[in-house]
Length: 212
Image (spheres, helix red, strand yellow):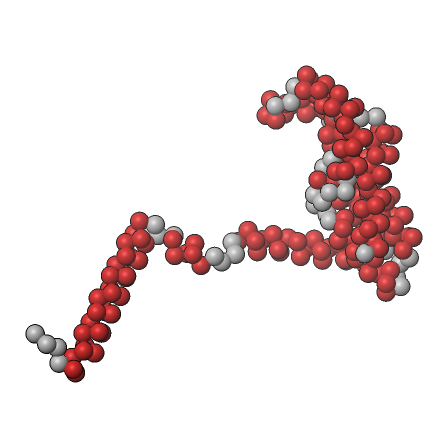
């Protein structure tokens, strides 16, 4: 039977309605199988992202307040904390200090000397924790982290062979630099050697962010 000209629109609308209905049924079926599929497709930032941002903003606020209130001692304390494993960004601290040099509050030589001193003191504290706490580490946590006296001996030999490269390289890497001192202490690398190698990597790091 021929379709009247006026009925062509109704046929088109009915076909589109049937198509939409089939599409809705497929979406509903997927939702029943995987209820979270629609939420995942929206790609909103997770709560962890906002939590990390809030923590970072809080640390930045604390760092700027300490620098503004204490001056050079504040820079020193923040660098000690950052190099001893406490989550304080040494690069952010030196950037703030360098900005204060631009404003005339500090001198470039002053922030570099204080920054290097704080960085090395913090690294020495972390080294000492590893050096003097190794027996406690083996006794109470050795089984958990798979550390045995034999493995400590191998670590000592590894640092004796490769520490000359490993320590300064790791001291110029973000995040890693704050935790390199612990294994160096656990492996009983000679302290003066560790200090010299730590300065070899730490001084350029502090100078770069302070001058930048």
